[in-house]
Length: 299
Image (cartoon, rainbow, N blue to C red; front, side):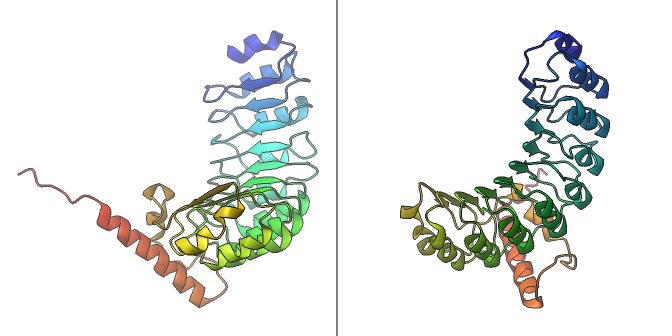
């Protein structure tokens, strides 16, 4: 009923229907309405009933749409991103969607400036590389908590997306100092970086980052247990925003789940790095376990 009532509006530029139980029928009403040719921003986050068919209609009918938020739309597949080929979309949020490498590879002919992939656990380094080859105008990227990503993903952003301004990779526990080195070598316009929870980063990371201060103006290094306070402080006077802590990542980062794996699926360059990763995550999990309250008997 909501989108049916909007059918008559002809001067609608921004629409937020976050967490509204609309279906493909509702999106159809919207795309046939009077504002279809004027809408610039659309947020359908957590509209769990919409499917790939709705994204296809949005891409075809909303010819002026720039920002599209599809986060936590659980029914969307890789076909949804294929529908966005050659569309007007310049900012896309697919946080929490079940998008895989094929979906990212389907993004062609689109001049994306901003992409949010937070929590897309099925995306791998290969998918990021294919994305960057096709979409080289990216400036703002958020790959936080994409647990499968490692250094090659950052290398792809640095090599292909030369205009990168913002990179958030909080919770990407496989990233090493090499990822930061890639950024300092190939991202001359980087201004904001978040590496919180990247537990394998060492004091070498701040040393690399000193080379790009400026233009780097914001650095967040929370829960980076292997970056010493002294090394982190070398960056503080050179940026306008600085955060650092050497504590373990909180339970919300989900690292406790990683402890149950054999690490056989983790792609790293050497057995030494694999062992380092396993020991680091294992230590974090032990520390978290020691902080849990013991069970109290009620007998």
